[in-house]
Length: 130
Image (cartoon, rainbow, N blue to C red):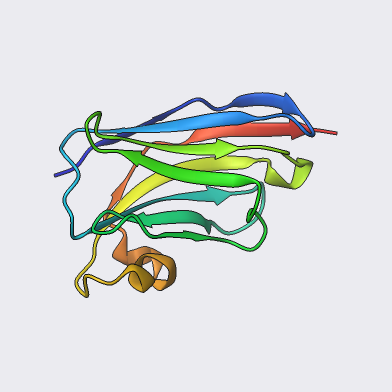
């Protein structure tokens, strides 16, 4: 069982930056995906960015490409999401998650259904004001 704990959320003005952290209770395993999802108010949860532990390959939603960066520090069992140039539409509850990658291929992390992601954090709120 993997436990994930997010931190770093908060309120910021448009154009600002935040860094989210996700601490895991166990060491990263190479055949796992880790990633960030978000759920804006009144909308469905969506994938933001993922990383395949096996080779470090990352995936980003089009809406955040060039502004967000996902990274993994295996020595600290921590994943990060650096968010720059924040926009009001980035306002959401952000969740980190982990999934076993049965194909050992990076593409799986960016395309798998959310029901394949078995481990979830409790979420951290990000609010961007205009």
